[in-house]
Amino acid sequence: MKIYNQIKYFLEAHDYINITIFIALTVLSIFLDVLSIGIIFPIMNIIFNENILANYKLIENFIIFISPFKFLNETRNFHLISGLLTIFISSIIFKNILVLYVAYFKANFTYKILLRLKKKFLIKIIKIPFYEITKLKATDIMRFLEEMSGIVTIFEQLLILFVELLLLVSIIIFLLIFDTNTSLILVVTVLFFFICLNFAHEE
Image (cartoon, rainbow, N blue to C red):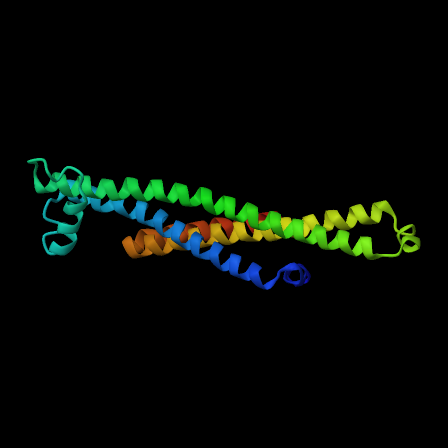
C-alpha cells in the first residue's frame, strides 16, 4: 500500500493517459501474439483435411483473397495455406514492430517521469534560502534521489509484470478454448508444482 501511494503521488493527470495508451498497445500486441499462435492450428488442419472450411465460405474466400499466389493456377488448398501463412507472417512482423515501439514507449514514459521529478526537486532546492541549504547534507540529497529512482524502477517493473500476466492469461484462455481438457491438466499441474515449491521454500 505504501508503494502504491508513493507511485500515485508522483503520477500526474497526463500520466494516466499514457498508462491507458500503454495498456491498449499491450493488448493489441498480445492479440497479435495469440493470433499468430492460433493460426498454426488451422494450417495444420487444412493440410490434413482440405474440406475443413467447407461450411465457412466467407472465411475461406477471405483467406484465398489474402493469398499472394491466387493468380497462380494451383489448388484451393494451396491458396488457403498460403493465405494463412501470409496472415501468420504479417502478424509476427507487425507484432515485433509493435513490441519494439511498446518497449520504447515504456522506457520514454518512465524516463520522463524521473526527469520531471528530479527537475521539481532541483527547483525546490533552488528556492530554499542559502543559510538553510548549508544545513542539508549531500548524502541526504543523494539518498532522496536514489529513492526517487527506485520508486520509478518499481513502477516500470509493475508495468512489465502487468504485460507478462496479461500475456499468460490470454494464452491460457486461448488454450482453454482450443483444447479444454489438455489445458486444464496443464494449468492444474503448473499450480501443483508452484504450491509444492512454495511449501518447500517455507520449510
